[in-house]
Image (cartoon, rainbow, N blue to C red; front, side, top):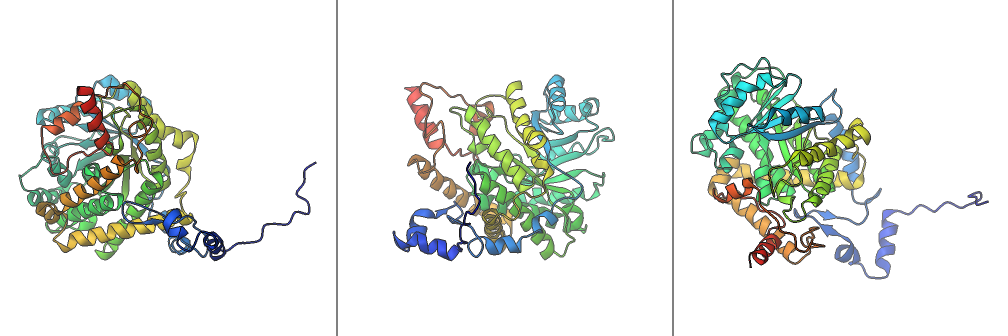
Length: 465
C-alpha cells in the first residue's frame, strides 16, 4: 500500500534561491525577457510572488485595509439589469422574479422619462432598487414627482458621462457639473442621486488605470461642485456610487475594483472628510464584447462576474452577450442575470469578505493600480481637474492613443480575441445593434472603440463584397 511514512519533506526554498536557480542556465535577464509580462498601464507582472519577493510588502501593508473599507452589514452583491423606459411590464416582472434586485431604466426622449416616473409606483418596485440611466436634464425634471412608493432610488446623475454622450444640460460641461449642487436638498434616506461612471472612458479605449483615475476625478469634481454651493461635501460622498466597467482579464479587473476603495479613501482623507464606504458597481465593458461569435461574450461575462466577486462590488451589472448585435431578448437577459446569481447563491462567493486578501499577486496588482490611478488623478488636477482636461482635448487624445496601441496588438494577434482573431466561425454574418448605429450618427470624441474593431472592419468589408 502506498504510504508517505518516512518521507522527507521538501526543503524550504526562498525567493532569492528560486530566482538564482532560474537564472543559472539561461542568463540573468531571463526573468525580465521571457517570464515577466506587462499590463497596458506599464505594471510588471512577475512570474512568482512569494515571501521575501514581489508582493510580500504589499500583502503586509494592505492586510485588512480593503476589508475595512467595505460597507458593513452587507454580504454579496445586488444584480442590476438595464431596460428601456418603455419595456413591457411582463419583462420587468420576469427579471424581478428571476433574481434582479436593481432595475435600471434608460430613455431618449423627455416624454418617455415622464411616463416612466408616472408608471413606476404601479410596477411593484417598493422592495426593488430603481436606477436611472439617462440625460442629466431629464433626471432633474422628475424631482417634483412623488417618490413615496418607490424603493431605493439610484438617480444616475452623472453630468460628465451625459455630456460626453452628447446629452448636455447647458451646452457647457463646466456648467453641467455645477448643476450637481442643486442636489444638496435631496435627503430621501437610502437614495443615491449621484453617479461617477467610467464607461465612456473605458469603452473609448482607456486602460484600467486611466479609467479608474478619470472616474475618480469625476467623483471629485462632483464633491467640489456641491462644496461650491456652500453645502457640506461629506453629504455628497455618501450619496454617490461609482460604476467601473470590467474586461475579461479578471485579475486586473478585480484589482481595479479593490484599488477603487483605496483611492476613494485617500480622496476623502486628503479632503479632510470622514471616511464613507464607496458604493461600487461593476459592469461589463461594452468594448470587450464582440459582434462575431457573440456566445463567447457569455463566457467573458463570467470573468467580469468573478472579478466583481473578488473585487468586492456592491452591484453587478452584466450586459447581455448579444448587446452589440441586437436588442437583447428574454434568453440573453436571463443568462446575464443568472451568471452573477450562480456565483453568489451556488458558489457562495458573496459570503466571503475580500477573498483576494493575502494574495501576494492581487495585493501587489491592487497597490500598483491604485498608484497609477492616483497619478492620473493628480495629473488631471494639475491642469484644473477632469472638466478642464476634457475641454482641452487632453483626455480624448490620450484615450485614443491607448485604443490605437491596443488595436495594433490585436492586428498583430498579440492580443487574442476568441472568435475574432482566433478560431473564428467561418461564414458567420454579424449584425450591429441599433444602439451602435445610432452612435455612428452622433459623432463623439469618445466613441465606442471595440477591442475587436480592426478585425470587425476587415470582416465587414469581406462580407460586403
